[in-house]
Image (tube, rainbow, N blue to C red; front, side, top):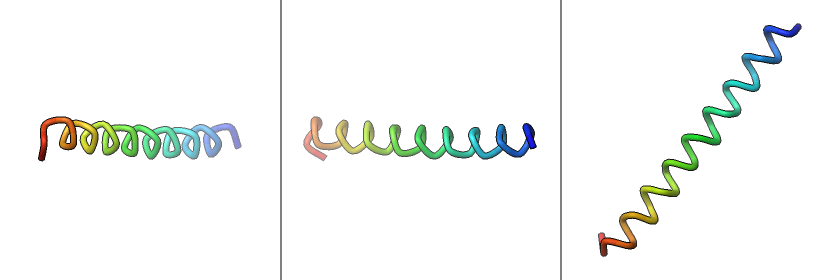
Length: 34
């Protein structure tokens, strides 16, 4: 259904955002020397 697709897409986007933030945090830790 359209609702099911939207829910799946939202969950996928949230996963991508979580990974993006995790990567940015990791880069920040490396940049500041830990």
